[in-house]
Image 1 (cartoon, rainbow, N blue to C red):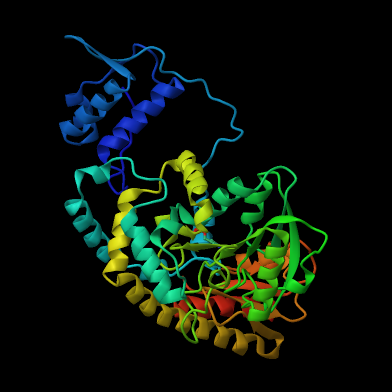
Image 2: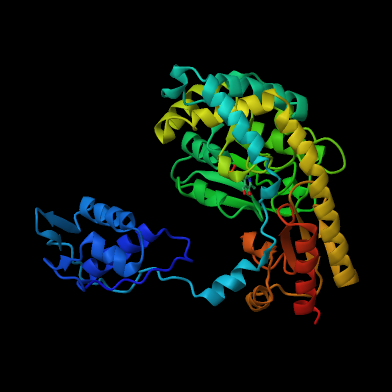
Length: 465
Ligand SMILES: Cc1ncc(COP(=O)(O)O)c(C=O)c1O
């Protein structure tokens, strides 16, 4: 008799439990080839379940070749379904319950995550339904690599309204997140041995994209106003300069116009291009977004935006505004990457912008982010008094807090984690080490006010005692 134990309180259906348990016994050899399985009637009565539960489980095992039915004689374990146990190495095991419980409770100040609970998925779903219903049959076909014309037009108008960017839809390429725009630019401009200038500190992933093309990132320091343009090297011949002028990632500085001009003059003199990563400037708390670098010289700046912060990262929707001369080459590279970014999502997003929902959503969540930021600043100030200072608080989904005289080393970070709170040292985003000790990047957009105050309380107990 096969030995099975069903648990009706589990989320898993009874059919699946029967299927999985028999399958496991066959794979492990506990049920040998040609062993006869009990009839569905017998097994269902043994297990006190309806006969259909067992019939369906048997049908699945039959379909997958684990068992075979012999006319008039019953159901048997099929041959060749025993799998010798592999080495345990590399096999994933279930995480112990206790660890899961602790991890679930961690208050995570990870930067770069918008308020996921603030995305109105019902609204999006209703729009999606309308878009799918109204879509022409041809919209289900392959589409152009640069993206759906309607979205590019809506975006051009939106960028004009919100960022003063003067461009035509034909100069826009829709990308699978900003990340893909950087990959396209790396392919467009970089080859083995080329140089590129990047900010230090910077995002963790982007230097690898450029280095992956064989280019050498040359890191320039950042202060509270962003890239220190005075240090742009006269003796280098970079192909690209990667900057976050509206909200330096992660330190938060806003590049003043003098530095912007210096940067553009340098790019012109060197005959190179600037990549403007404008990832979260929609969320400027003290007024409308600042003007872009692109506006100053659209022929030398590739402007990259994303909906990962304004909406949600899972959409994987980004875009690039580029000088017309490069559009054709870029669309060809994009074609060989993924043909195009999912087109029906693009149609939904186009409608979302056309109907004013994007701007309404940004206005709505900006107020909430501002509250979250204020509560974070207030509770950190209460907890650490004059031992804490803040940077980059006027824009975006994160700020930088400096804990004076405190080294955010691995031991302290581990203790914080054990206390149920996670923060991210600026040093981990830095290539030149030792310049930002005590500074932490703290994302607040995806945490409720209660979580923020509780997170800071845990920090206080661990750090101050
Ligand atoms: C500095 C910076 N730019 C851009 C992005 C957006 O990337 P994506 O649009 O691919 O999600 C991120 C993501 O965290 C980021 O940290």
